[in-house]
Picture 1: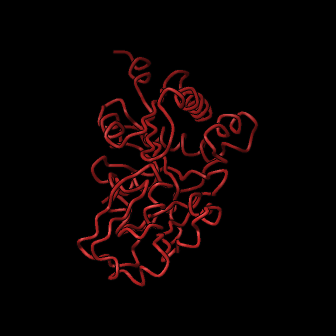
Picture 2: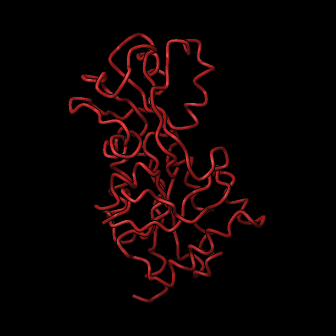
Picture 3: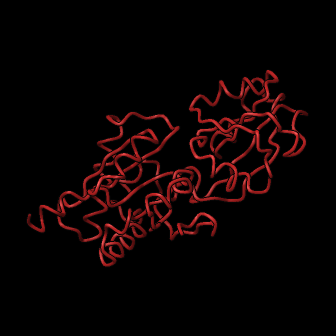
Length: 257
């Protein structure tokens, strides 16, 4: 197998569990991004493909393949699977509407939750619910949740908030964008943000299992950090709601061993 053919098998896997978007809709956007990133990094033309998967299981399956060399993933996914997949962060995404970091908000019915212990028997619903380690130890690191608290994934945030307002033993962990929309809800008076996370990365681009050489990883990191400063880079970033990238600034507890 030639070096060029081997290079063409390199894949950047985009995975965003819990967020809307079908693989078919996203594919042209991630293709364009991968092509722009490879060109900016000085990689051979066609040496980096891209694939999008909106599910945790699908993303894990794709990242397990030997051709998967890079992952573009939400921070909860990174926290949950960095050790398993041997992920090494290259850059953080700088999102157009949030920035590179965000706070997660735990929302409960007004007057129902006073501290972590008052959540005994509760279920926490979240787009990040597929990553219970993130929920407990990153987003809610300051709250020692009772052992019987269940954590479940949902993409139906509005329905989950209605359950909170109705008085069910449910709380919802919202990302920053969803939390900002709380005051617009007709039942907002029934809801209360009871705690927030520290500032945490929104999303990360990482090398998978050391499958990129140090030299190529460095060239890509340099290229990604420069993207968004020129028109070409900005054109490939805007459809993904990206402003650019910044150096990784991850909480120490989230780094792979």
